[in-house]
Image (tube, rainbow, N blue to C red; front, side):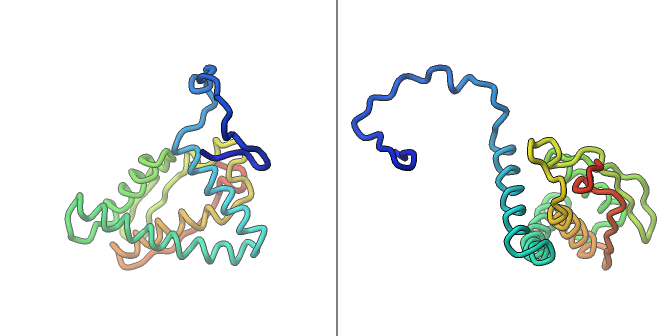
Length: 165
């Protein structure tokens, strides 16, 4: 059993639940992992600086993008995805992880997505000012698009890190 720093619970009889498990504190697995990621990114930015933090995040996001590419191909087939299908997969992915990107337009050489609900914005400490989290999304989306269409370039016209959806 874990003890609080400087205390020992050995030999202490603990009281019943005391309604703790029924308290509506708004914490579940997903919100906990989002909070951990935000804190990790913030600590990394504070420790090594935003540029270096973005570099480390880029490496992680590249691995995640490869995993996502394999996962979607396993479900939808091995052939390269069309530009239109890539756009809808990116929007689908964001919805599956409780964010929301909508497909604004698709042309043979351009996908325009609109972020209508930030993945991290609803947390108390959120993603404000944490541009490294934008790097993660950009790398995931960019690498996925490039693997399936041969090219990708990401532009952030507005970001949650800047206080926009």
